[in-house]
Length: 117
Image (cartoon, rainbow, N blue to C red; front, side, top):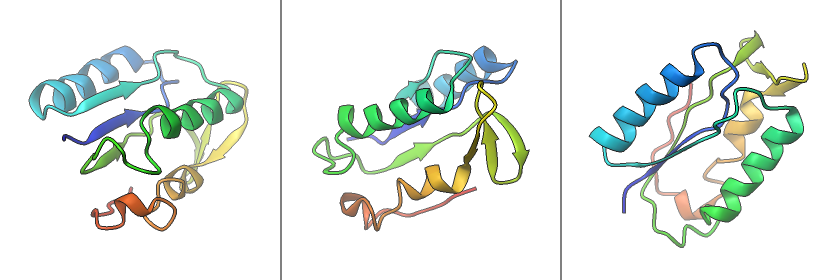
C-alpha cells in the first residue's frame, strides 16, 4: 500500500495553490493517499482535533491499513523556528507534532525511515 501524505496546517495566504501543488505531486505523480485540512483557519483546538482524527481514521497507531510510510507537511505562520501560530494566536511547537508520529510512539512504523525538518 502507498504512504499517506498529510497536510495539517493551512493558514497561509497561498493555501489553495500549496494544496493544489502538494496534491498534484503526492496524489497524482507519486500515487500517495493525500489528506489535508481544507479550512484556511485552524485554532489550536481545531488542530488537536484534526490530529486526533488522523490517528483514528487512518489507524496510524496500529497501521492496520499497512502504510509503508507517512509524510507530514506543516505549513503556517511561525513565531520562531519551532512554533507555528494557529488562527486563534496560540503557539504550537512543531516538534510536538513531529514527536506524536515518532516511531517510538508508533511501533507499527518503527522500521520506517525518519526524516524531519
